[in-house]
Image (cartoon, rainbow over all chains, first blue to last red; front, side, top):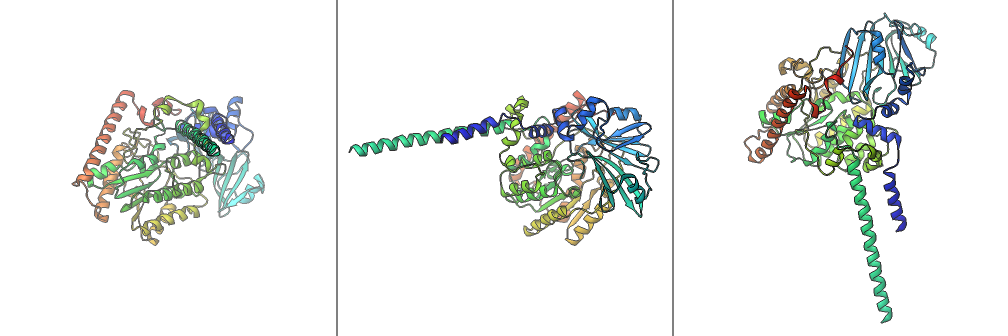
Length: 193
Length: 375
């Protein structure tokens, strides 16, 4: 009996102990605790970038007009550097508390996801062949050019060739040996499938 | 004689000790139960969607129509309008990002309480073939009453790093909220105010559509096997119970609904002898004006849009499915009069709040300044 009571007491004590993952997701559910839930969602990358004020080196990033755009970083300074978008759309996020935002620029669009009081880069999608990846791949490139640039370390599904680096992916959809879609994406639970 | 006395004394002592131990165990369980109630999120002042599934159990279970699906049902259809205009009784068992298997198990759960004449399933969730996020599992599953359907739903929905025990004993999941408790957690420990209107989450504010985002190119437009498996189960369950299943796509313009997805649903409906209604094709007939009938630029309809869509759909239900008009039935009247009062009171309160603060402060809307973009 004493054992039983001790077990129950231990259970009670457990109610006060810390389980970081559980805590952060419950905060995420309740829409609070920015820093911790950012760490929870991005594995610390976003917070690190925010602290250092530089982009994360652990992943693919897109460069345009001298602005480097990594995934999973605070979107505000990037949007400010890029200037007024051609189009802007926002809607309540299906995966997070807050708004998903889409900034459309000439040749590409940026999607962000909310976390606490900030927005983070979720994906970049090419709209035409006026922009290219850092290794010169654009809409219309061939598979040979893609593999020459990014190697053979891809996964292929239904004609989509996906490279993974850190917490990001770079995906090329091929049709008739031509790239018809290029997307940089942040690997974040709830965003990618 | 002495031995008998001794035995009696031992018996009494054991009885007392036994009783004492039972009392201790009961007290500990009671404390744990209270702690669990205290630590679980209440979803009253924000993230109202978290209460939708739970509220159904307090309801009188006499519904002709049950809606299942994601935000495109709980924001876009108004059961009170369906009652007022056609005398049809309905309930929305909707929840945020409700996936197809969530919908199936919620239907199983619902059918243990009642058998509606019609079930309406919104097909947007077909795009998700796998569980997406724990937080959204919680918004649907935590509100379900313990049942076989709930356990099956948990097993099907869990992400890799989740454990079923944390759904059965949520204190194991939420125990670290102890340092985030607010007055809301104490206030709603034993009782929560009803926030929905038979599962409908009302919003009267307006945010017009200014841009319609284009769909990104996908490598594969085919819905996944898992999605089809659970859609098949929904279809089979409805057929077994003699329920008419209607597949719908709500007229929300975002997330993008691809033509390739639509074709699959048309084909599925044809093969399974079902009706599939894509309301995006009927926007003009419904009378939806995206400059006034949405509160978040096209993702969800506001009250005005939901009432228009419901009225349009109600006419179809009455004419094509011969659903009875209960408006002259006294048994229903008393129940629905109360619901109408609550509906109108909330409507008036939301308009008042809009006027006072410029946004729906108490109803989950973001303040205009936090909503602003970089422009």
